Image (tube, rainbow, N blue to C red; front, side, top):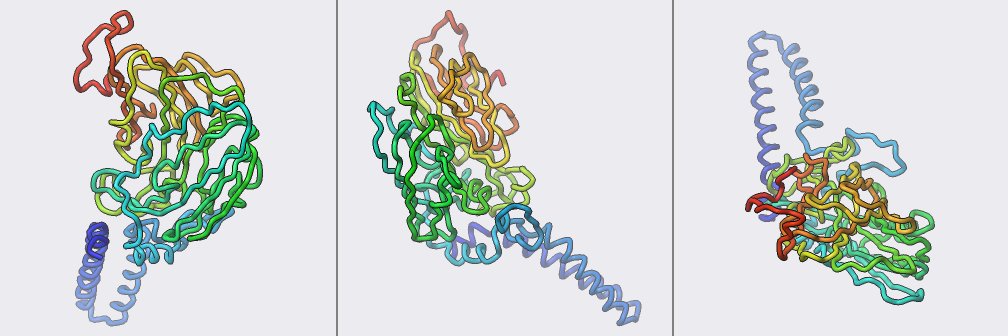
Length: 410
């Protein structure tokens, strides 16, 4: 209980402040009106004051995530994009059962190796949906909904023509139903029509990987957007039968948006803001689940070829993926591994719910910053650093970078 109070203390103070201001205003108005010596007029004006106050303060003073369905409407196929009040109550009453994850970020190096076999086979993939508590930024805590306890979920790798058996487990501690929609699946809901699991339940789907490409997967339990903005997305690679050109390093990076009621950097437990999601105004836009997730674990050497599997978990914004100081040798746009890649690309646009594969050869040592080149988003967390070691190449780049030049030039 003490932990919950410490996480929500700012909301307690905010609510108490509004209540105290409301009471003092009511008392002041009552005393002023009593001087008119008209009890009827006093009562009427007090009722008007209470009505106006509730109309103004309830929608603007309470976190938007707590209001649905009272103040928001939906015209989509689900019951709505917010958290019903009963779910919010369940969250706080079950707060102690959620796992505290020390680091929510998926390691960008955590990728299965390239497939060497030349024949199709049956591949089994198991994943578990779990609702946890973790830090978005120092002191800023969110209730993440995850695949296997990280954001993004695990990188899935199969071969064109493989039979894929996917089993989704929904952890018993989850408060919500969860599912799995794989964009690599041809069939109802991308498999979500089969893989809808209640807390403690498991579901299994078998499909054939018909088309090579890099595809997004995500939870599609209604409302899908709300589940994705809690962190439920990942990538599945269907390698073509001939494989991909070999590279020295592969990295796994996904961009995501998080909509919270508190201002940017506000500490404590932040509550999901439905209205902000509907308006497309995220507080945090990050790579791999949190701020600073890719500042230490992207490393390579001069002479190596790097491939980045990049996805956009959305749910509102396209990403403008760019590596400062590099030019992409090849870009497989929108995850297309059927057609020849584009060449010599500076920035590639990745739509919400889409992906791209980029590769480039490292010629000069230094720090290379990954960004969404809609650069205001960098201040919300959308950046990382690829650290390249090795000998200088003065024929390509002749100069001494400043020690604090991680973002220079942009």
